[in-house]
Length: 188
Image (cartoon, rainbow, N blue to C red):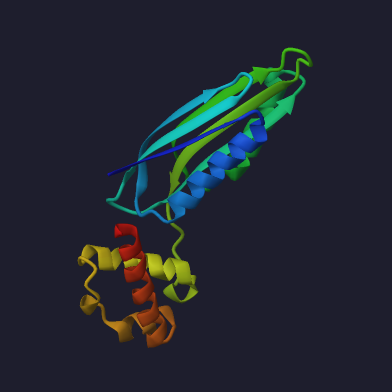
């Protein structure tokens, strides 16, 4: 299990939601596992505060993500309806929602209504042939195998990996070098 938290405070709702979504999704793309549970904290005022804490379970890998969106309208109901339309269009097919929060705020002077939604989800991974894997996806998969074998590259069949991914043996050797370098840089 691994605990992750993402926090941002801003006077701009768009900046706050976009920053949280970008930070969390960039981090989650590189992590193996699925989101086991989540806590969302959302507050409005002179500044918007948004904090999302996630607990990752590494038993199996899933597509995992966070949607953070906002909408404005002439009243709360209007803003929420527009917001839900956007959020529902962004949820992956067959997504399992782990947690969600919807909040509204009405500005004191202009009486403009804002709605914010944060949705944390898991979805089944798309199955695609190994030959269609990007370099990052290939390295992530090889890195997970190496991690299971205590980063011992001797357990890998380089020729078989090259054939599976449709790349040269040199590409696989280079991938392994980069994975081991990255592991050392994280340690040091």
